[in-house]
Length: 479
Image 1 (cartoon, rainbow, N blue to C red):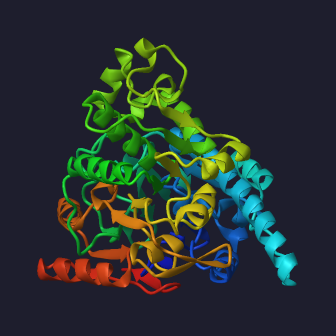
Image 2 (image 1 turned 60 degrees about the horizontal axis):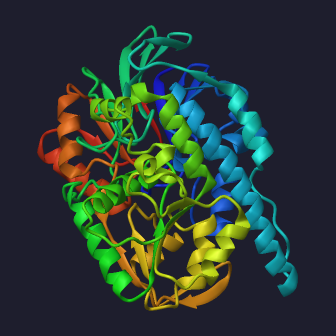
């Protein structure tokens, strides 16, 4: 039976990445991401599978972001029995991410059900709980970079550094049978060169097929260094209005990058002393994972840590410490309890609040938005990608009215988007990576809105490279 790929999710959009590689009775699942979007549609897409989870032989997880890992506990509840393979850093990060996802789902459903009961509407249940997430971690097995590993009969796995987030990998499957031997690469998500903290992506050679993201397949990023200047301008402008800067941010990597540049601005005295709150217990816990996995960081960061000048050390993040220890970050505080988080809404001082989730679909950022979005003194600073149909995307598009927890609010706050923070490769970086992976029989473009996937497809076709944008649930034979 020929080798096939079934494109299950993250196709013609950027949410819910998951793809199934089939060979005879062997089924290898690449990622199991959570689809994020409108509540009813998201629930349907995350619970209806066009394959049998019980028949999956192995699951390979590229990295810990929820749109790639977030549906794993749900899959296990529905019959997934296999082992899950990832780097050791990803394993430790995904434990935090999944347990946080389960907790957030429980909290959001509890809050939503209070409203539903008041309105006489049916109550709902979460996709999975924190307990479900903790159980899922028992299935994980760690794999090191660039070590060939037998995944199933005649299927071998090698992970390469994707340079996207801590521990992110670019899996390569070598599949052998009686008629063909193929090398299939999976670059979803692919990082950029010269990002703070991380090594540059590694390009695997001599691939036959490549599944690659196209998030920015038709766009170019400004240099990452420009982010710092734009961040400074937003803070100064909002501070002058005596407003708050609300930053929806992924707790993993993006929060650390924002803090890295805020630290630089403070040291340069480019911005005033202003309270900074990271309203995310998850972000604090992620810092511990960084400290335990220094080998995954770039040489510059490892060198800084050796001289006790870590850009993400907990010493920098705590208030009340001796200035000689705490550096310039005397106004930074991590918020853990819900009570502390709620008190920020009654605090009228200018401040910066960094909170999850990154696409404004769940978590504490929703409560900060509903309490602050109608105040024109405030700024909503977008530092990451917002998928179609998410609240974050509606804010980026500056919809006059947005719904939060089912209630309508006027968007009066200033909205600023800084795309140069992106950890995704842009059009030129994707083209460079693909050309370095030749020879390739075919390139499959996923993880991008349709216009971006088609733009990259056109650019590749013009260079004589066979590129294709699959449909959701389409099955393609590798010949």
